[in-house]
Structure formats: C-alpha cells, structure tokens
Amino acid sequence: MQFINRIILILAALVLTTWIGVLAHHVSEPRVVGSATAPDGTEMCVVQEFNWGAEPFTTSFVYRKPGGPWERFYYDHQDEYWASSRVAIDTNSQQVVFFRNGSPAMTFQWAKLSYTLHRRNQIITNAQWRMPDNWSPKQSVYQN
Image (tube, rainbow, N blue to C red; front, top):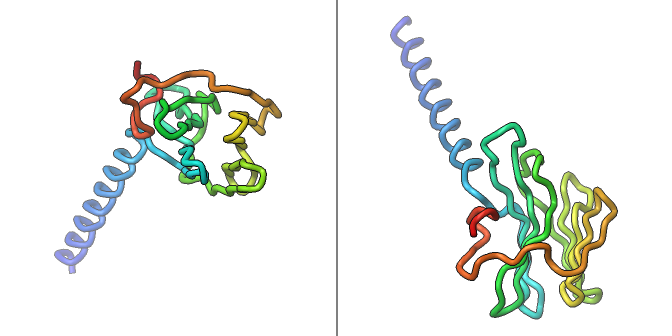
C-alpha cells in the first residue's frame, strides 16, 4: 500500500510540475488574446505580455491595414491576466468590439481609425505608436 501511495504522490508531483511549466511558458511570452480581420483586410488584435514586476501585464490593441505597419493603442500597463477576448465584428458600422468578462473593453472603427477605451470612456483617433516594420503581435510591444 505504501508503494502505491508513493507512486500516486510521484505522479501527482509530475502532473503539477508539468502544469506549472506550461502555465509559466504561457504567461511569459507575449501573446494574442483576441483577433479579428475586417473585410478590407485590416488585422486587429488584443495582445498581452507579462511585465516581470509588480505591474503584472501590459495589454494593448494593435492593428494594421493591408501592406502597412502594425500600430498600437494603449489599454493598460498594470493589467491582470486575460485568458482570451471574445470578438464581435459589425461590418455595417465597420467596427470591431473586443470583450473582457462579457463587457466591451475596446472598440475599433477600422475605416476611421478610431479606438474607444471603454473603461476610461475615451476615444482616440490614430494610433499612439507605430511598431517596427518587422514586428508581429507575438513580440513584445516594447521592441524598437
């Protein structure tokens, strides 16, 4: 019986260690938590990366027009973990809404390049940052 208990304990430790390793890898890499593509080919993503400090995550909205560079809007630099973001595209109004916990977090009108940050009730027209030409949404937003 002791032998079986030891085997169960060893297996449980292996499963826990594997799970912690997968989770650490998942949060340690910049990642896309939601994405959409507009009918005109505009790509849009919510990206998040771990800050390795007291301010856990930086969350941003990025987009690019076909053939253009990625551009970035601020969401939060002291954010909590996002597992994913539900996305709703409205082709009639040419906008996409990214949700967090069932509520709209940000809206982007791709024809007007207008970004609404719902938690601040703030509308920003034109991106705040242009990303380097070789940047992709799976890279840090802080790369230059």
